[in-house]
Length: 102
Image (cartoon, rainbow, N blue to C red; front, side, top):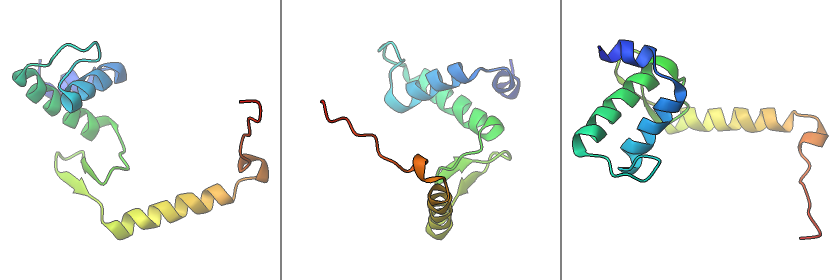
């Protein structure tokens, strides 16, 4: 099966399992990932991210397979915009839950 057809038919659950394996070197159950499996998992998750995810990460893989990096000023403007949107919410969304009986 070709990589792109595999990625097109892959579920998000499988992506998350492969991502865990590539990041930690272990499958979610705790089994150690072989070096070849880790390399394959990394290639597959990069292809999945390029195909399916619109990432806010500083570094990601674009749809064309190229690495996309965002500058600090671009990320700052995104954070400021998100903070402004959060303050524009009705006041009941900004309240803090308090648990006095704990």
